[in-house]
Length: 182
Ligand code: PAN
Ligand code: ZN
Picture 1 (cartoon, protein in one colour):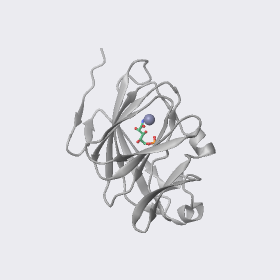
Picture 2 (cartoon, rainbow, N blue to C red):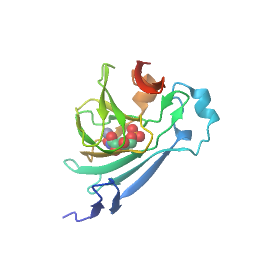
Picture 3 (cartoon, protein in one colour):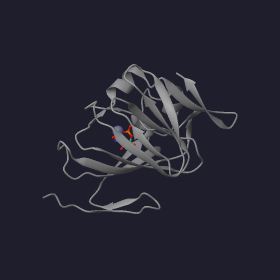
Picture 4 (cartoon, helix red, strand yellow):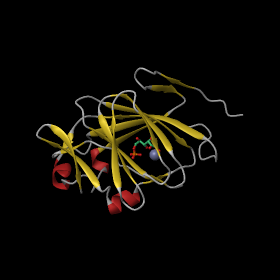
């Protein structure tokens, strides 16, 4: 019997207890933003986002992971801070995302490269279908906090996004978010 405990603060999304934390720095985002020159000129240690995960039963078929992502506000050139984005290695696995606080967009892309998006504002629950790549974009002035739950054996395929891109980008145009083809 797996018995591990984590505490969720429902107001902030913060997890404590039996969790794993990771941080994504701008220096690890080579080739993902359109304006690579500007990205390289910014401090590599700039924190784009942090992820907390409660991961009992790691890699077990039928298990579940529960996490919170905290995406900082900011821009690389005109493009908003965003997550790397990924398909799941095991393509036939879905995921739930919900917005705890902040303002942003969830970008989704199917395997044919057709991309769509969903606005993420507090309370919005989004079902990410199987075989869909997903990426979060913070279009607000504060931290975008997103809860997530996904199968523990899903795995993350970042390579496909790095190679082929995401089809759409979100930029700040005239002070407002604009989704454009990339
Ligand atoms: C999330 C993401 C998290 C960070 O937990 O892993 O938001 O985004 P990247 O993994 O794209 O850097 C999730 O979708 N898990 O499957
Ligand atoms: Zn995922």
